[in-house]
Amino acid sequence: QQQVKQSPQSLIVQKGGISIINCAYENTAFDYFPWYQQFPGKGPALLIAIRPDVSEKKEGRFTISFNKSAKQFSLHIMDSQPGDSATYFCAASPVETSGSRLTFGEGTQLTVNP
Amino acid sequence: KAGVTQTPRYLIKTRGQQVTLSCSPISGHRSVSWYQQTPGQGLQFLFEYFSETQRNKGNFPGRFSGRQFSNSRSEMNVSTLELGDSALYLCASSFSGLSSDKNIQYFGAGTRLSVL
Figure 1 (cartoon, rainbow over the protein chains, first blue to last red):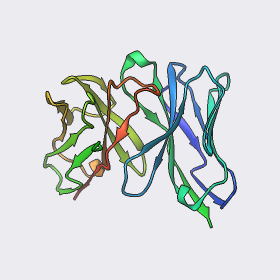
Figure 2 (figure 1 turned 90 degrees about the vertical axis):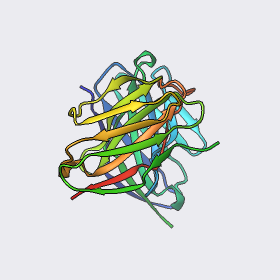
Figure 3 (figure 1 turned 60 degrees about the vertical axis):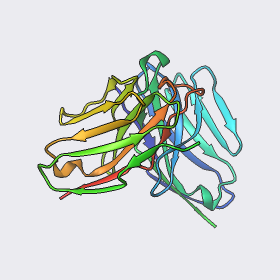
Figure 4 (figure 1 turned 180 degrees about the vertical axis):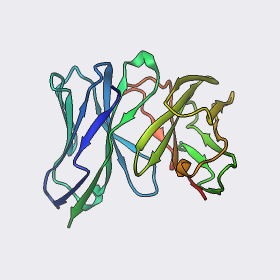
């Protein structure tokens, strides 16, 4: 199975709140799990990424939590800001030797109200 | 450093026609990947080129093809267009194409193709 399941489809949070987006995968060959942010009219841009050998990675207000046994990972956006309003995609990719082939989740439309 | 450039930004074609999209990667990047983005199917991998060779291929029909030139620029061609081919086509480039924190994929803004 190559799918990556993402939820929720849409999310509305208040400014200063925590946004949480979840993803689950089935393919145990996946070895690299990036999150992308996409604004209207733009291509996706890498936010943060994690490998399975760590359970958590934090960069500024963005944190990835990874549960290898459950094959799940999530993005937490702390102190959410209106400028964070965008579509977020989780993705997964096989091990490095396989070249580039990202499998994306369905996307989450995040709206942060001021 | 210039980003990934895709041309044209918008295209309108009719069923049965063919179309060619262009992608100029970031200077020094040798891997170019193509993705199709639609509201219903999301982002789906089409293929990846590295050093003028197709290295990976997604599950798309043979009407979708691509190539890469010696300067790493890539083109994607869709023949016999169908209504369902209407989508945003995204190109991403990276240095080696291997997935890691040291080899980020940078996406262009895409080409919006409408098939009438």
